[in-house]
Image (cartoon, rainbow, N blue to C red; front, top):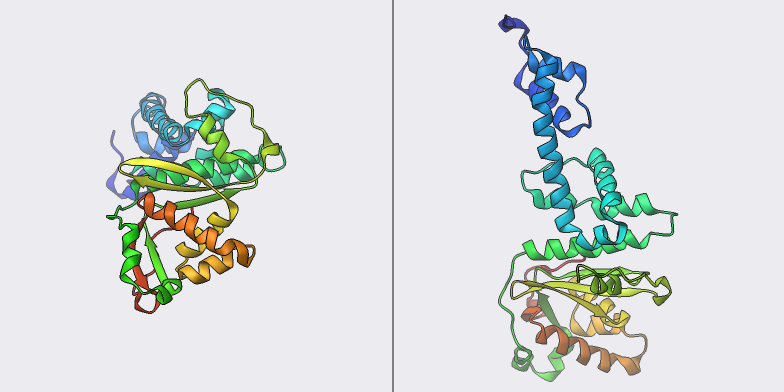
Length: 280
């Protein structure tokens, strides 16, 4: 016997009940009864189980693909439990599976606070920067000769526009070393937290993700350049003293142009758009 039209639930209520049933570990009886209508709720629940399992497997697979090093460090079983707990607080809000892991680094940092494994949150942050870099727009780079169009006295006032895929990550822990050591499937070297802070830049170059370890001063200058500072202002803000300013500027410019990270060079006064790169 079908439900009379005047008592039929609206589409929004049905969608909400279905969403809760698919995302939860066990569907609520009230939701199953609402969805089943006059059908057997128990039998309907068994059909819902198929959708629930598929949704969970897709969620887990997307998270594993985005955070392979983090999974390797904690082990498959514990990562699966983390994924379940994370999903309970951050269910997918997008049709695109790419976004499933967006909130994971911050969530994991909170989960690991006070455990001695705080570095896992920063490691996940680095892996998300890689994921975000891959999906960012890409622009044709310019070479170091782009600086030659300007007189020497103008150089401190130039602004570098950087690749949109550039992401910056810094941590008090050696996250680049952990990431690098775990690029091989059988690698599981211990984490030497005594190695201290590491500063990273991530960019998608020629369809591959490159992860660089930078000196602290280089990283600070790159942050300032990403924020739209001129070369002169960024170098002064990043250098620890006047003696290192020239060395810092030359080293970072050689690296940035050499890796294809610079897409445009403009005078500070002529710059019409904000920096397109960002911190991860």
